[in-house]
Length: 293
Image (cartoon, rainbow, N blue to C red; front, side, top):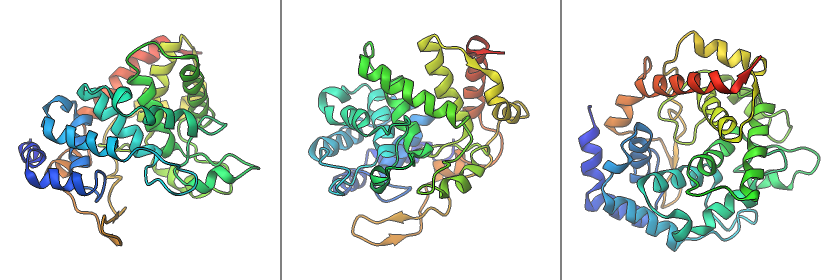
């Protein structure tokens, strides 16, 4: 696949290690974090050079959480949800080495089961302006990458998160004033994307919700998700490159246009996607057991 070897070689390079030392996350979309996340989403997590994984893990160990709500911490829920999944899938003991990340998830879940990476949203008292994008990755992290039985607190966390997904019927944006912009953003969620990184689409939400339902022995009302299912049944393909036009904040300050890399451009081409088709087949299997009505 065009760009695959180049990404692996880059991650093994001194240049990549220096980039991770400078900043584990920025800039988008061609720093090591994004190469690793793409390989993970493709199912090639264990092919990532161990030096890159360890450099990323060390960065997170050396910059533990301080306090999200007072603005003193640069971490965000969606990024932490993604990187937790990446490191856990690689085989690292994330809870042992970075116990603050899981506690972060449990601490910052909003009362409706969602999250918002805008700290100001937590000060809103008359509504709950949670974000689908801020929610999905932490929900997946606890759902798919808990290497033991869930605690009572984690079950409550997951049940609230699943309730949030159901309340939104997987496709609806926030009904709130504070997060009104999400109602416009949600119009794109039926256009599937790959890779997701922390972006959201309805297939990603459906897979997470059905996986929760099977693990929890819950039956879901098919009619609630009729609009989503109807769209997916007509065909599953990449309909948008969600990262295009987003831009990036630079580690040294300021902003710039995003810069891409060959593997990302190859696998995100508009049209059929083996990765999305595989997830849709899994959803169909889960749905045959978890949907009723």
